[in-house]
Amino acid sequence: MKEEAEIYLEFWYDFASSYSYLATVQIGAWAQVRGIAVRWRPFLLGPTFESQGWNSSPFNIFKRKGDYMWRDMERCAALYGLTFQKPLHIFPQNGLLAARVALCLPDGVQRGTFTKRVFQAEFAEGKDIAEWGTVVRILEDMAQDASVILPQSQSEFIKGILRSYTKEAESKRIFGVPSFVTPDGELFWGHDRLEQALNWCSGDAAR
Amino acid sequence: MKEEAEIYLEFWYDFASSYSYLATVQIGAWAQVRGIAVRWRPFLLGPTFESQGWNSSPFNIFKRKGDYMWRDMERCAALYGLTFQKPLHIFPQNGLLAARVALCLPDGVQRGTFTKRVFQAEFAEGKDIAEWGTVVRILEDMAQDASVILPQSQSEFIKGILRSYTKEAESKRIFGVPSFVTPDGELFWGHDRLEQALNWCSGDAAR
Figure 1 (cartoon, each protein chain N blue to C red):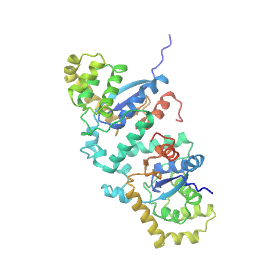
Figure 2: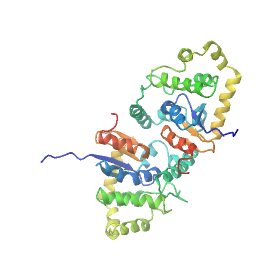
Figure 3: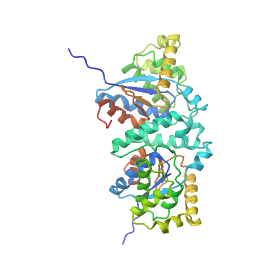
Figure 4: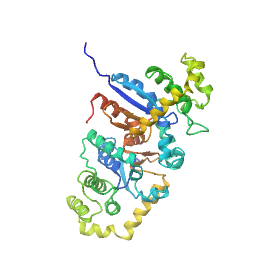
């Protein structure tokens, strides 16, 4: 039997990121059509921002850019047929709990489904994803046992994985999210580069 | 006779901007197909950057983002079938002369052609657009009289137009280039939003 190397695309995201919501909703179906596996890579972008001297999202620091981003999100969501609601009170939200819980779920369908539902809660349903209740309801909807997963998410093992993903993102020179990294090391930044990244994986694109 | 309002899209750019090169090459043909007139709006982005505390392009200040931009430019140019060459010595180049000369040419085909050729000189041919020789050659290729236009470009009248465009860009809350502004005031940022902007003008898009 011939063994075929799996074609995959790494999807790097921070649960606080608005544009990651758009990518999260699209990537699963788009990748499946092309036979590309998605590797779900939640991490914390905060340290990267801090290393640039930013103590918040650049969308808060650079107000004009931030105002634009929310309008662009509205328009893009309308184009893609997605529900979108600007978080009323908090941006960026604290995505630490969601990231740790995501890492308790196996990479693939389960982590992908959880990720999508967290972003929907945050950017379509006006929920605070830092609240345990929000995460518990998502896990229950997925028929997962929250009473097992939540304590596990606070374990040193899971914290360690999140730290190692965050370091790996640094080493891959990721500076914003969503980002996509191909097996041959090409970095694509922005939900609007998702199609290019997938084409790159398939070898369709000009290379 | 019925008078029809012209459908137009304002195209705001700074001659130093790499991504404006990509938009410049595409916008003419894409707009023409849709019956949309392009209003060419060169201006100086420097004051906006300075108001954010930046004394250079953010692609120089944030090195990782800058490295990414050059790779992204290479890939996008390859996708679009464009020649692209990273400027060897200077980035961003000084686009003041080019902007003033552009404003000596009537808005429309002539200003558009000049704009395209300047960006090609800068990002495809390794030329320095701050040099008078570069601009003179472009004007001569266009059968324009450089000996009339260059002195005119240094007149108070033309300087004033450039200042007023730069103020207008500020008032339209432009924070980066290329940007596109529709007659009803929608702002789109990035060459990768050009199609959305044109669709918006045509009334094709979700609004």
